[in-house]
Image 1 (tube, rainbow, N blue to C red):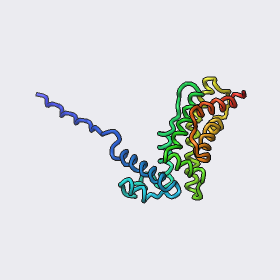
Image 2 (image 1 turned 180 degrees about the horizontal axis):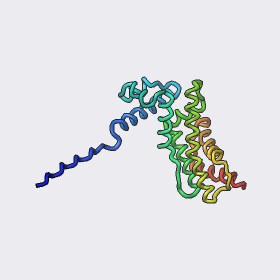
Image 3 (image 1 turned 45 degrees about the vertical axis):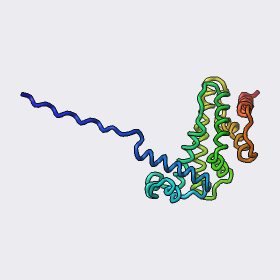
Image 4 (image 1 turned 180 degrees about the vertical axis):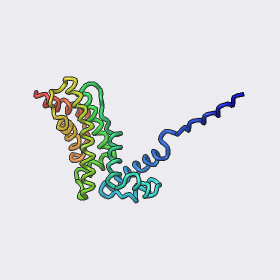
Length: 201
């Protein structure tokens, strides 16, 4: 009589995310809280670790430096708060993007981040983190313009980075320097004016 093959062990089922994901979420949320209360320049890993309920070594092991932590926290918050739309129409994309940017800058975190960006950073490492953050956001948003060129909505050779800056700057100026919210219809008018300029009208 042949011996039966031993049953294969059941595969280990891991819960989505797990502890590492929960720790990352807690630390980034704590970093956002610290930015709102004290600003980017005064953020410390000790404070963030205490808020998140983890050891400082846990934060250093994952992020290495305060600047890396700030960069990750700002990227995560902006990715969630200012998603890059893909509606199939460049005017709608830019209008949606400008609206999301205005809404984000009206939040406590968005306002704190925007003010910190205006003031700049004396710390070279933090200043480099800022440059990396803004370049990453610019590159992400520029996809809207590249898609519009591919669809024939904008001329070939359109400067995508400049186009995004032309949309973002008035929104940021109103929120951070003018201290006034964008009125209804502002985002749409802004998008139309930028597109007219890009098309040479």
